[in-house]
Length: 137
Ligand SMILES: [Zn+2]
Image 1 (spheres, rainbow, N blue to C red):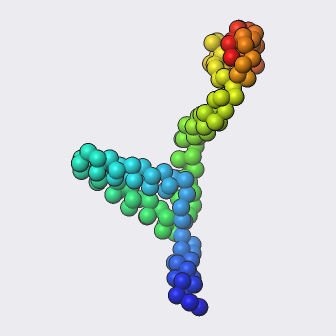
Image 2: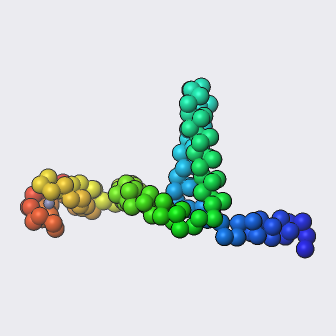
Image 3: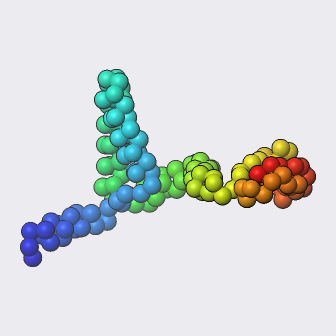
């Protein structure tokens, strides 16, 4: 077994039964990194302190052997942020297709809809509230 294989083996033995990284840990680490950058830009030491607490918390979670508790925390985090994460992923799709489609909302129920660009003015019927209106694309 060479040097790197030994390190890899010892690391995997150390991590055996431990929780590892999940979405909550990654969010905490990314937020801590952003706070650290803010600290360097502004010089406000509170950002550094909160960033440090975030890193300690993320490391604690990754090395924790209480997998059930960490799973529960992650599940709560995912439940609470589901709406935002969906909004963000839909925004990315809309941004990627912005030259192909014109996106708009139903004036009555705010449901998102789209029309192919260059289709001209169309009469649109909302699929959720059946409101009929004209929309340019
Ligand atoms: Zn509608």
